[in-house]
Amino acid sequence: MRVIIEPDYATMSKWAANYVANRIIEANPTVEKPFVLGCPTGSSPLGLYRELIQMNKEGKISFQNVITFNMDEYVNLPEEHPESYHSFMWNNFFSHIDIKPENVHILNGNARDLKKECEDYEKAILAAGGIDLFMGGIGPDGHLAFNEPGSSLSSRTRIKTLTTDTIHANSRFFEGNLALVPKQALTVGIGTVMDAKEVLLVCNGHNKARALKHCIDGDISHKWTSSMLQMHPHAIVVCDEAACDELSVGTYKYYLDKERGNL
Ligand code: GLP
Image (cartoon, rainbow, N blue to C red; front, side, top):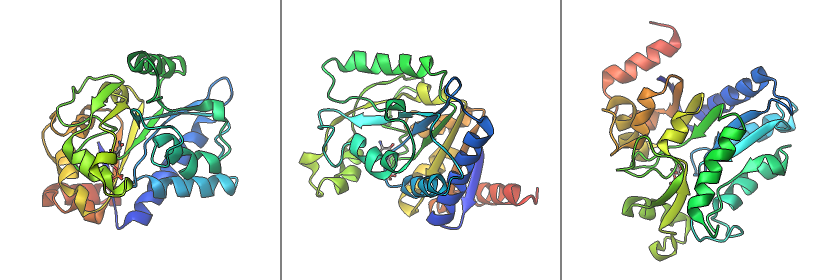
């Protein structure tokens, strides 16, 4: 695993956006061979999306031949609800870039047959040639997408019931009202993320310090599902200083020195 420690949220977002942009440019995607990008929601990737939008507007990068698959979506929340992940993605990213709407894939949490919706999603990812780069965030309880503590580390796309921790954390988007937060979501599995050729997580703020510690400095455990990335051959975590508050001094120094070329 590669760990990039940046001073703050702005530099973390810039680093991540440059990495994603370079990957897409290097792949030189075409209609026949598009680049397949996995997309997260949440506040962590907002800066990264803003940077990518800026690069797209400046003509430095194009999304014309990029296909996206989102990580997750709430169950039974109308697509047009301002807090649905459909709304989030179009408002914060897709509406501002030159992506073709037919290349965007987001799970349908209102599908009549949710199990089939999840199975079809896995098939669609395979049909697209697999995910080249899965971007992601980390929940305060260490979850990746909506793979809550206790999720199988080989799970595929499926329905998950949210933990009380997550319902509390996400209530900030629902007027602070726990009753308004959906209790279930469709989510790609840890196995789905692990199949991506590369994974890039962004993690910022002191409230993520415990999760980051378990992700990179702890044992692999279904209690902290993002820790499974330790098994991925090409995983990168980009974080800010505040998120490092609970890393061991040795781990913190090692990653800083490594990226500065001191080792
Ligand atoms: C939600 C999403 C996750 C995201 C997490 C953290 O639960 N399903 O994919 O990583 O929130 O969100 P934030 O970045 O707002 O802290």
